[in-house]
Image (cartoon, rainbow, N blue to C red):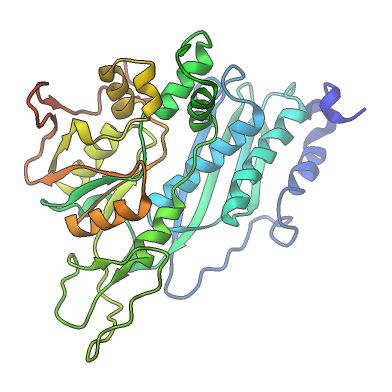
Length: 370
């Protein structure tokens, strides 16, 4: 009889027994000391991010199995690295566990973590465990990036196009289906499964980072840092014409963050950090087609703007580059608006059928909101 058929708990095997089990998920040469040692190449900047996920706030038995909780935990942190333009190096995991937590749940969590991380060659390099009355998972992720390729929130400029890398509202829809299984009866089985998958196993958009820089080129002809051209990925760089040479610098300044707290939240945060405003066109916001079969358009738009946990990237860059990037990324990616020199963020309707709507942080999820 194996551990998954018996109620073996972490208290029963103790701290050292638990650590021995968890270290089996880590590279042997990176764990066992008081700290992990990660090598950063010369000319690269270290990027560090931390997320805390708490039972009953970020996941629950009703909506998230242990392996899905692990996947989501990894994806949330990798998404933060992607939003900075960074390549992941490794993560550490801090577990706070009630003594009656089953060992099967903990190992399931680590199986989900590694299933996500292995897709991006990212190891678990250490962590900590402690007893707690509330189950929580605290992850610190490490990545590196060339300094001139860093994506920040504070570099958006008036005239930039606002790009989203995929559809929004799918995770919120999936959560609603999990919480209320009787909903969405008009959905077919594939659409229902896809929406639930979007909530339980989101994809961090590290692929966008690769495409973003793989397609940039400049010629030695006085091209400005915000006028560089994208070449469709994964084609190699087009050979320069006679008399021209590839110019490795400067790279365009790209502002961005992920949409884990909702699309509206991301745009507002970017604008605040950059001291600018924005206008979003409601018809351009990419929403899963399955939602049209299930909820009214205004409900779908609300979920897209404020539902959160879609883990797409929201990027601000010059229009020509934005158009090329959207073409590279394909279905789901879209230019949804423009950065303005005003400080307000408006959702507008080009047909003037719907009134303009000002976007704020207050309507999205806030941990200590009312």
